[in-house]
Length: 621
Image 1 (cartoon, rainbow, N blue to C red):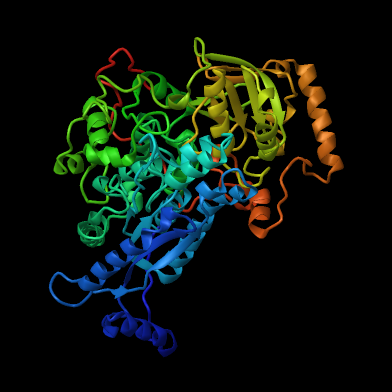
Image 2 (tube, one colour; image 1 turned 90 degrees about the vertical axis):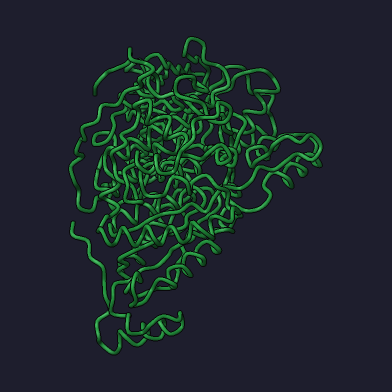
């Protein structure tokens, strides 16, 4: 692929508005025929996005100050800031509107594709917030593939329960949804999310911001500071312009930075921070945008992923939702670069990959003077917070795609000798489960395996996450000292904890085995062999009988199972007819065929991943 920027020619019709914009922005109209630079931001309807505007304006001002024809200035056309739109996961969880969340990643990417390509930006700075827009932004920048850099807007500060002083966040509010005292529920809601910024725990936002930093597209020291930190509008804004100028000078593009080994680095760090299960949905999409069509073949196999998580990569952070602390606390003890330093020194990351600062990853960490782990918020690799990585992929007869994902870091009980055996409780959609949790919570028993289906990329459509039901189940289990597991063809919030398994595929809507499970079936999750199985479906006769019955229901309903959600908008219809499986990123592609712009080979670098503290585990893949 030969990326190219667009310049405005001297046609008077095409120059007229360009001259007008330059005058309105206060820049030199004589520069309108030069390559363009600009800043973009992601916007939405929650407090996650409230800090974006101030950062975009600060960066725009710094860019404007550098535009000109003098020494050390950028002889370029400055364009006005542009914004994308997204919905709030925090507000929509548990509602049918949550189906638009993952679709929002695609909408962000499409909007930025239009802006970057039609405007032809030669240099871009992006300010990102919330969960899905940052991934859509990075994907768009990778496809555009001209010098670009990202900065997180930053996390929100934890709230505080006024009576006890207990730290709160949005997960705290979801976990009290079933509390009998309405005043107490309102009290927690009022104090859970003070100020501005994206969710502060190691939920999806901070998992993916850490990923973006480690993959090389965001300076590491800009990941952890909170949204209201003055560094973001002061020194960070000027630094970003300096870095962008350097990227353009050296023609260092996103696909030079985001390569096979840098993506592997980012996935390993996601394991080490006990990150969100959404990382295995977003990493394939980022890899696709970087030119690698199939993450699980080109970058890392499921077998290697599990081997690393089981034996090589420990959890280093005592972070919410499975621990105590937030990203604000990680910033106080030195930031994400501390985690990266620990992993580099242990031999777990390739430090030779390039980053957006123009340095290698190892050199950037060295220049930042990354501290050693404090041992309280961030632990050393030698003596980690948890010995095994936070994520595990499962195959088996319920997940022949080898797509099912479990956040092991968040499991609070139920795995005896790494095995869970339970009884299926089947719900044809999330709303049925929420109704049961609201009205008949006493019907849930120890070792129930709740199954929520027809909520996948095509079935819902949109693959909503399920923070509301998982939070209620977590509270129910803690109160009654029982274990209730949940599996679904949908996905989970990074704030979910418990024995919850998402992305089970193929999804029910396209005939996956999860759609054939019946109430009372035995479900076995065996982490010794990394399989998720239904005992009854191991019998070929039972499987064939149930599949034939399922096929008939679909045929009698015009080709769509009646338990699928209603696709009653253009966006939902697009998802219904074009969503690809979670293993390929869950994105929207014509005819469900994953599209890759300018595919490239996943070249292996001369790096041997190992954990020097565990020399007994030295398997090659």
